Structure formats: C-alpha cells, structure tokens
Length: 242
Ligand code: GLN
Image 1 (tube, rainbow, N blue to C red):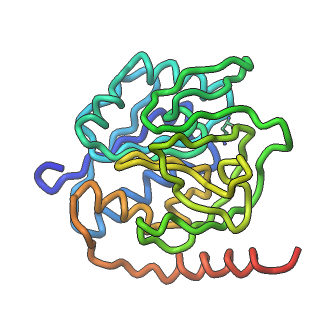
Image 2 (image 1 turned 30 degrees about the horizontal axis):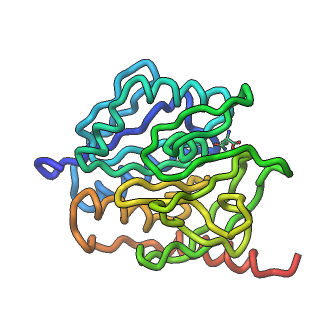
C-alpha cells in the first residue's frame, strides 16, 4: 500500500472469469472505496505482463483449455511469484486455485505444472463432476462467518503439509477428496472452489483481504444486512431435508 491507494490486480479476465468471478474485483474495489481508499484496479489480460507491485491479486475460474493457457502464461511471466515475494495477497477461485498449486491435469489429460504458490496439487476426479451449492465453516483462525457459494469442477485438490484448509463443508464437495475440506491457504495466498461470485456472497472475505493488505486488524463496518439475509437464506435452504 502506498499513499492510501490500493492496487488491485485482476488476472486474465480474458481466460479466467467463469460464473461471474469478475464480481470479486467489483466487491473488493467497492468495499475499499467505502473505507475511503483510492483504488487503482488493473485488469491484466493474458497477453500483458503481470505487475509485481500490486497489493491484492484476484484470479477466477475457467474451463480446462483456458486454464492450461493461463498456467503456461503465468509460469512464463513469473510476475505473480515476485508479487507474492513482495508480500502481495492472492485470492483465487477454482481453475485459478488449481493453477496456484504444484500441478493439475490439463485438458489434454496431462500433468500441467502450476505455480507452486500453494502447497496443493490437483488430480482429475473419476466420479461425477462436483456441482452444486456449498455451505461451509471457514477456518476458525480467520474469524469469518459461514461460507456459501456454488461449485462446478472436475478437479480434486489435495493439500500438502504447509497448506491449511480454507473451510470445511457442511454441504457440497469442496476439494473433492472426501475429507470435507474446501479450498486452502497459507499466509497471504488463498484458494477456493466457491463461485457466486464468492466475495459478493461472502463480503467479509473481501474485508479480510483488505485488512491483510492494509495490515490492520479492523475496518470501519459496512451495512451488510442484505448479504446477511442472503447468507441466512442459503443456510436455511441447506438445512431443509432433500
Ligand atoms: N477446469 C477446472 C475443473 O473442472 C476448473 C473449473 C472451474 O474453474 N469452474 O476442475
């Protein structure tokens, strides 16, 4: 952060932005402005270099082929590694989450190297695609209310020893390994399977990213009654017998 100005980078909107994941950039931008911050938002297309001095980087989901292209370009570019080395915060969804890990299975059925910024690797699920509503409890250390969203993925993500589960699901598949975990994170790098877009469904996650970027413990509150009503609706729907 410099001069009360937040640099928000949305990575590869041309390849990775399924299911309205672009909404995540809108939510972070708006909630930062509501706290009086200036926001410089950079939408970085896949033929452009990744800036290394951003504060928060967002990556969305994508279909299998764009996911491979994005991984190739991000590996070649190297900027995201440098940004994380500079202390940047990264929040990734689905295909973006898989790309941040050590490897995933690409559209050609081959093992595709990821960026290794999260200690996870993804395989291809042999069973049905993981599709549907998700309700979970976010890791208690992060101090956030229940997570809601929806998932749509074939990949299964396995956590290594240095990655913490982002959440545990009450409903849905999450990482798909059968252990109930959903997503992963380390200090400043986060991954989740949640679309929705997830930060519109769970705006306090956006605030967590802002707090990390600003290095503060609290932010001025925002009237979130509308979000809370939606969350409660989803929780109640999830508790209805099928
Ligand atoms: N292509 C990946 C999978 O199916 C990610 C899908 C997505 O981003 N929604 O696992």
